[in-house]
Length: 273
Image (cartoon, rainbow, N blue to C red; front, side, top):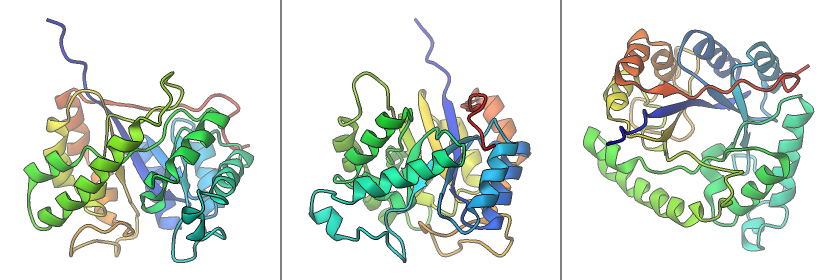
């Protein structure tokens, strides 16, 4: 009988370029921890520093963290959702091109608050990935079963949210090209404990990862005052998540469990100049 392939893990940090604390966390967690990828907010307040850090770390896979909704929404507004996405395609294209103008060839596309998995938006994101040769997009989901087994406070609302994203994932996965030019990991974990992907949770999770490719996304920062105590939150940066990425125990658990980190060395000349 052929043995199951070893689990492969993409470890990604969202909001790269948003603050100096997030940027520092990305740099240190990649150099001295288990972080393999980061998702860049190309218009973030600290984006220029993030671009410099990307140039200093060619082994760090850098994608675009599309900002399609926030406290200050992009100019297209909610009406774009109701008009078949007119304006959205241009906004997505502009952000991808801005990343390219920094000298960074994106390894993946995802978005702030998972806005890209809206059924109107996702086909536009896949189309942008195809145009620019970007091999991966995030399809959040596949997390509910593991979250249920872990249990703890907030499990019921987390599972309700997980069911919504599982349904979206099932619907949208068929929009990925059959030729494999754009793919998504077998599962993406992080939404249901956003801001609370702590060392103890990762140590519980790693030995239970199934075969195939898993993406694990976090929101780390070196700011020690940043923490989420009341429950998961989609926007809270977390010092505890940064510490988890730097944890020797987490690295040892990956090795002991036979989980392979999926690194991404950018091609020569593809990094910032």
